[in-house]
Image (cartoon, rainbow over all chains, first blue to last red; front, side):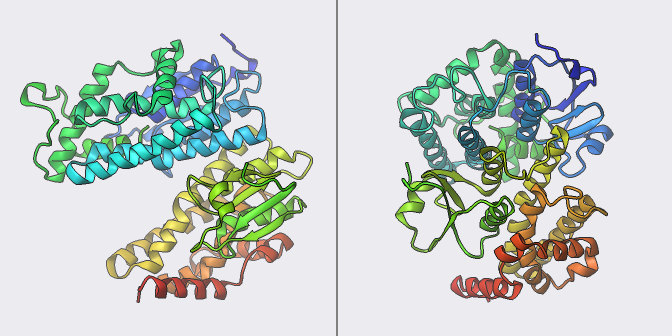
Length: 268
Length: 222
């Protein structure tokens, strides 16, 4: 465990257990061997502390370091590199490689995440269009793994995981969960062999297994949100929504579902 | 590789505030480059090869290798030319704050501005309210400082200053005055406009307004 003297001011992470943005920060802290206190936020009932630390967006994750607040997961991750330069770096050293990592992180958040969220929040033709979008986006990443910027690499960061692995990886587990809940094929192994291989290697890492919640918890959560989303949309139960026997044990109130839907819609 | 030419090239579109960020940064750093105006209705082979994912400007080519997205380009210029004046501060927390506010500008300003001139009635009124809130928030962050970064013109200033050329348009479509609503922001805009890099990169606000009028006509918006 690396622990530098700069760890004297304590680290506190405000997060939400099902938020992949939160997982990114937890994973990064673990990869760097940085100890931190974790505070679970109820997003339907945000704490005063959270609102004080992130008045602009009122979201998690927020990392507080020595009393100073850092919101936005990708900004937090870069901060960790900057503030702990002796720790295992998330970004590569070369300026051009850094630009590529940043580009694909932005793609993950700006394009892929919302597309996956759209699949989850829709049915019928609308969902089909969203699925096509996801496939297009994944195909671009697959192409980079096959013959582009990340050709021949085990991870996007190279032999070890880096920023892009953390950003893409914390969220890609939703793909399998959403496939299960909606019955839609999102990331077939034959269509995206390299992406699948990468994800498998990523999810096998100790720090990742420590960070990502158990799949049955994710499934239960996702079923609950899907149920609420379709109920709110007034759509009849889609082909693969939960049956009465599978009704979620902790159905969130409608307000939470909308918030959860917004979080889940962009989470990847 | 997109192109084999040595040195720096910028694929850009004259009125793009995102492109202007790059022009300002290059000027601030004293880096020579070739400016290549793009026809966005008839995209060049070079652009499509340089940015196949988004097919957008700006793209910076450095010895033929493409760097896409304006804020990523700004980071790249800091990192690839470390002997030139940096846009980002060196303190980690200050860097995080700079990234946060530049990202805020990215998330909020252009989109809200577009809704202001594209929409009518209630949705336009909503966009107007949002724009006021955005400008007030940015004014709050600026405070009494000379620039967003403090004494020196920096990352957030470069990220936001191109949008000052759009203020006139926001004012006309939103029926408000930036000077009245956000006097500090208005003063900051004027201050930035006196910098050579900014003066040379931005187009007159009337030209931006004309451009929007042309877009509205093209899209059949009254």
